[in-house]
Length: 186
Image 1: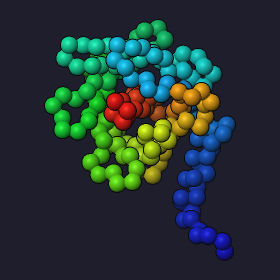
Image 2 (image 1 turned 90 degrees about the horizontal axis):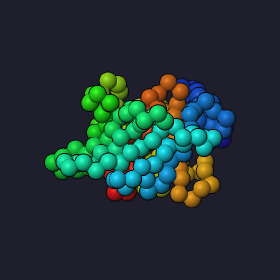
Image 3 (image 1 turned 120 degrees about the vertical axis):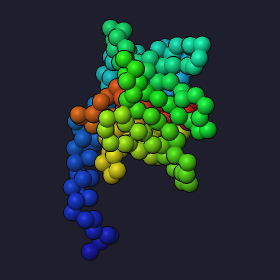
Image 4 (image 1 turned 45 degrees about the vertical axis):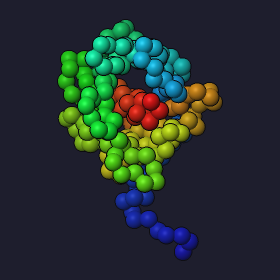
């Protein structure tokens, strides 16, 4: 017998992940620009074919800086704002009508890898784990991965990809990715 045997459940979970996130999998892929956060600037999130999918509008407001996510017709989908008067970095993702979608915070203790906690308004909390500074990390619920971020998928130097499992709220996962990027590289 070579190596350790995995429990049956974990083996099945890894096979399912390969079907979703593997080459030719069912996950939706987006291309993001590295160093994308500059308030006052706009940028586009593109699909895997290079078509514009979402616009991120970096408006500078009097009280705090805000990023607005819009569809290709300019309709607001969500926004990211910094939580004021916090000891550690916290970003709030709100829907177009001000409803709370998520709170993104850096974990207090992260000895070897970056770790972030995402409190979802009406769903299970998510964890962000991996090398955030190098855009190599996963977003998941416990052991289940719902999204993966990687620089491997694009040859363009200042880009990285976000793969999202079918059935997830793509705009929320992309907003979480941008919030984490802002806190890690800001």
